[in-house]
Length: 169
Image (cartoon, rainbow, N blue to C red; front, side, top):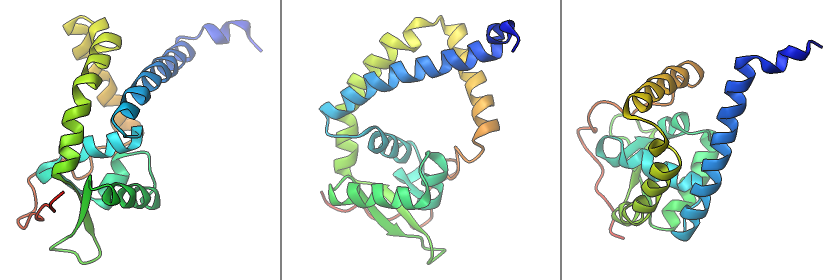
């Protein structure tokens, strides 16, 4: 094997990406735990809160996360039991349903986000000058779109005409 293959910048780029991801993931997980959330639960709440009407079809939620459709169903079941989400039938397709973040879910996000943003600023975005951050965001979107084209499924456009009513929690 050629000794210089490990000096290849492609190997270095992926290695650095993994190291950054691992370091941030560890910091995030500890902070989420303080608020009674797992990393995947935080991701689900955030994706729903950032979507039109605070909701996504279950299939779109699966496409946006690293979860299978059955994995999303299990997470949504658990979060629904905890009052963080509810399900709502799709008015235009009986086979589909929406996961909808509840008031309790939004409140949990409100509690969690200040600490999360501090971690992001201290250990990630704060390490970069504004131009470098803009270039990084552009690069990450380009790579994300190539390797995970479903990552934004259902997140654009407006909420359905008959948005589901939020359950009391």
